[in-house]
Image (cartoon, rainbow over all chains, first blue to last red; front, side, top):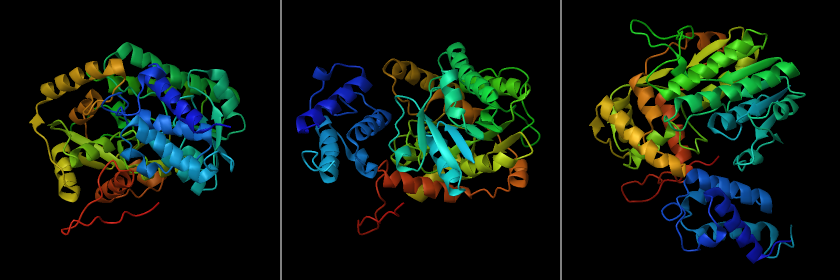
Length: 91
Length: 338
């Protein structure tokens, strides 16, 4: 079962895979579009992949408001916690 | 009845899935490792791994399906390499057709484009206006024409194929900002320029409905582009309805050069271009198209353009590509739900 740190690591790993860079090059305050060059398609791929891995349903209507890496992690974490509990115990 | 949809995660594909499910048709959808399936997973579909590069995978995906929809053929994002783009596009169609012939599907419905049509000057273009040779001056038109001819070669060998030729599609689920990108950028005041010419548009839900009705069509080609408009007037209409700004007009050669330069800059990082060369070419070679055959044989009643634009605008607002409109007191209007 993935804990909070694991889930963030998976997000960063998927991001790095999409952007074809090393995970260590990604920092929380970086902006997805301006700093990392991730377009809306990349963001869609990121959220789609991670939602499938974590078995969560994301409210994509609000996904366009994600600006930074930390925003993306918080967006996913909010849905994960609501649907599975903080530890995944409800999964 | 069960349908296989290749390209179900895309713009036309998602609308097609909805139209098929509404008719009670079971849907199996192919997915590639990079396909964003998040919206498809919210629908009652069976998913299977298959790529247009792998005939065996395609055959397995088609087993047990009565009809195959190729709604996700190759789309040349950049107009930089005609030879490579043609090879990739034709290869995907060939593989899908080979698999469909091997499995023996009852119908193969292919989503092409009005970009493949010959230009006419004295009348509306129709399904029969097919250039004898690959069009020149536009990578997009050339690639789409070659893909269609590949399909025709398999139809001549027994594949029960129907080709649908939509214009620029507008409506919900344009998540990658295809034709809808013009609307979003205009309203946001970010369209970099415009060029004189004609666009022929269609509501994407009409296109999806046409795909379903093509299951029982006698004809083999149908144009789906009922709304021909001067591009400048279309932009003005968008601004009048939703706000935004019509940018500076440039002449054809400048538009081509700006688009080409932007694509050369964007291609190494796989970036998107605000006004791609494909769009420039489509506007410059755009023409009114007769949709009489689709209206008659597929019993289509096309959605009026303002209504189609409104639906697209509602979708882009719902997903925050655009801000919700405000009234004079600055209060945001509630957006309709799903």
